[in-house]
Image 1 (cartoon, rainbow over the protein chains, first blue to last red):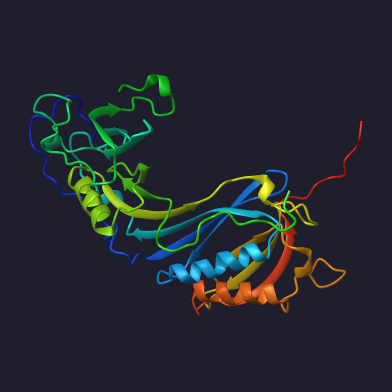
Image 2 (image 1 turned 90 degrees about the horizontal axis):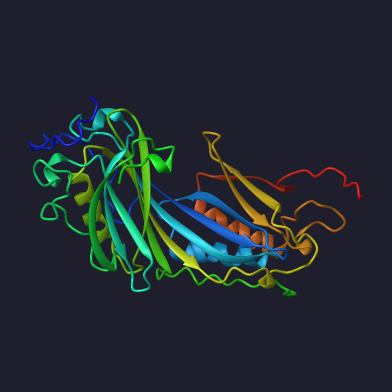
Length: 170
Length: 165
């Protein structure tokens, strides 16, 4: 089942299964994380799993009550919707570039020149220009409008030894 | 240093400062990977789902979790905190809940205000108006299946006695 670099000459038979549920506002649960700073500059964050149906108004009520009870300053709140399913290697494909250490990197910068990168891990042979390791932009769509700033393109990256940055082949 | 701590985080109103999407994958070997990307605060669930679908259709790995986070962020400054007694975020009141399956949920009030304790003790006062308001608000978030168990004041770590040199 080892990957065969540079042999992406045929289309993969795509049998992979997504188990994460649809992103539609009704996740399996939500999480709320509160981030605090105290008078000496120490910071702390705590996350708590909450009901999937908890509303912004209800979370705001907690945030307001928390601040009223604390000497620390509440400086950030993260509200996360979690869509999850079974985690099983049996749902993944055995194919060329089957490892998560192989990935396509989509690189963009915003107007402030801040980098954004998104990844397609274990990419299909079908999304490469035949007989190359060059991502085929005709097969790859960018992320949604408003998601990214200036699109700078795609490149393929293989982590030869993921624990050592200098050993990466990009 | 503020007399009363100042909240600087914006109101939770559906208009976050920005959003993040985290995708969690597993491959045929069982290796795991997750990537987080910061996205536009106005990105809709439909747009995110489209991005997720396109990612899945281009990968040999199985996507098993998507996490979509609304981030509300304000200025992080110690000057907005109060220097009153119990000023460290390492000290906290723990609100402990359990459901009938004996699963726990905990929420924390870091650097709690002294007036929320029973006088002369380090025991949180469940009859204090602020504490009652807080417990009522958490009850709603945690759903009716979770019941209150306890309030407890603690510090994150015990500290030994200091020897000045």
